[in-house]
Image (cartoon, rainbow, N blue to C red; front, side, top):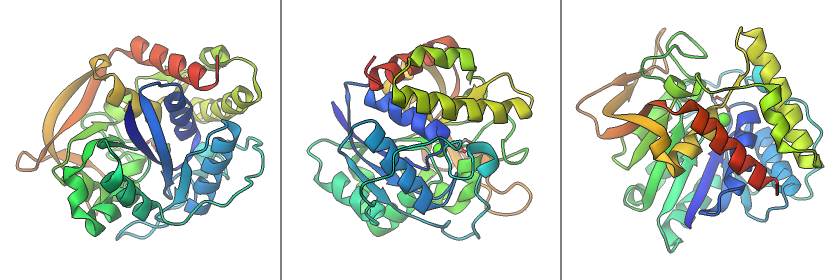
Length: 302
Ligand code: BDR
Ligand code: CA
C-alpha cells in the first residue's frame, strides 16, 4: 500500500473521491488537509470531519489555507455545491473540531512516512504551495502529486479559459506545477467527458451513507442539468483514479505555466521551458466510470 494525503475542499465530487479512495486496498489514507474553494475552509474542514465520521474512519482532518496566496478570494461556488458545500444534505454533527495545521501536518507526514507519500490535490493548490515554500525538501520526498485542475484544450468551467481549482489560486497552481516534482494533472480535457446520471448512482445501495452521497450527487446533477449537461461531471474522482490506474487514461507530457492576471487568469498554458508534467488528455470513459463505482461501492462496504 501507499500512504496518501487528500487535499480537498468538500465539495460534492470531493466527497465522491473520498468514498472512492476508502474502497481502494492499496491506499492508506493518512489524512485530509482542507482548503477554501467550494466553500470557506471552516466549512470544508467541517464537511470533511462529518464525512469521516459518517464513513467510520479515524484519520486526521486539518484545516489549511483560508484565502489564495496573492489574489483576493473569489466568492464560494455555492450555486454548484450548495451553501454549505455538500448540496444541503444532512450529516451528523461533528463530535470533534478539525486541527488548524494542515500545511504543517502535510510537511510532517511527508518527512516522516516510511514510504513516499502520494499527494492528491482536488481543490485550489494553496496548501501545497505553502508547504513548498515552508519546506522545499518535500519536492524530493513525495511519490507523486496528482491534481484535479486545469484544461489544455477544452473550454474552462469558470471562464472560457480557466478551471475552478486553478482560477481560485493561480499563483499557487503555478508554484505547484513548476516545482519539479512528479505531477499528474487531470483536468477538464477528460473530466468534462465523464458524466453520471441519477440512474448511475443507484448502484451505491441503500445504506445511510449511500443515501447522503446520492442526495448530494442529485443536487450536483441538478446544477449540471441547468447548464445543459446530461449528468454531473466526475472531476475529483477522475484524478485519484488516474493516479492508481493510469492505463485507463491517455497522457501528454508537457511543461506548463498559469496565466496570473487579466481576462485569461487561471488559464493553464504550454511552456516548454518548464519542468514536464503528465497531463490527462483522454481515456477510457466507461472504464473510469466503472472503476469509480467499484471503489465507491467498496468504500461504502458493498
Ligand atoms: C473542481 O472545482 C470544484 O468545484 C470541484 O470540487 C472540482 O475540484 C472542478 O472544476
Ligand atoms: Ca474539489
